[in-house]
Length: 244
Ligand code: NDP
Image 1: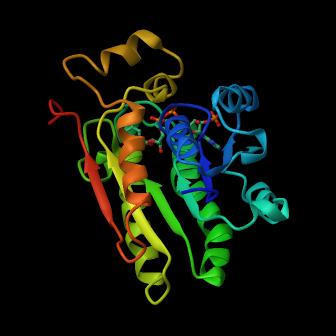
Image 2: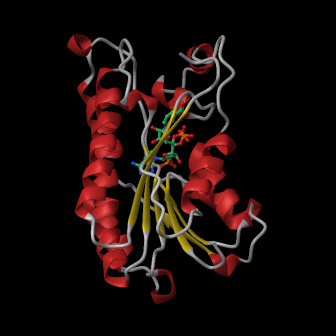
């Protein structure tokens, strides 16, 4: 992992921030992207690695032109991305489809599907050209099991599963790897974002379950990224023991 370039979207909190820590510890160079600049700076300051091994990007993955420009304008020493972790994502609301909020739908579809597609589209050609690379998409158990009120979020994560499988097919004949890491419940800011900052409602989500930690998920992502180069882990589902 020494000096490999790892691009992590949604690095400002939760699973993305945990990935930053584990890959930094292993000697990687990190491109950390998210919208909240101060949070990225705090994370960078907390990582015990030289500043020249971190490149911060304030980036909204939903903005295709911004993604294109961010990738095109990376300094030359940061251009050769070895690992792309498409982690930025969110859920909004829990409501019946027939009562759903259009803004919530758009945010989920734009971030979880289109954002992931934009990053992949702009980063993967360089990997193919250099004959080296790994795309790790963060899906969810929600892409395998649909729960009441989860309609659109589950749909976006089912799309991530299909896109990961499709990309794997499209990259056959190249050494570029594709993995989907699909966690169950992880305690992060995810639930607060889902309920638009309603902390009480967010806490209730974890009642009766000992959820995964962001580090649990980052560990699995790191494992997938560090197999021998001929080994592709296509998909991993990891769940809290007590989540159905
Ligand atoms: P967090 O809310 O802690 O982190 C989400 C991250 O995504 C933040 O860093 C946020 O940064 C970033 N993000 C959201 N929208 C955008 C955007 N438009 N552009 C750039 N970055 C964005 O949640 P998690 O760590 O839990 O979520 C990470 C991934 O894991 C998501 O894809 C989620 O769907 C998935 N997941 C989470 C589970 C859970 O139970 N927590 C379970 C299964 C999967 P910022 O706001 O600064 O832009």
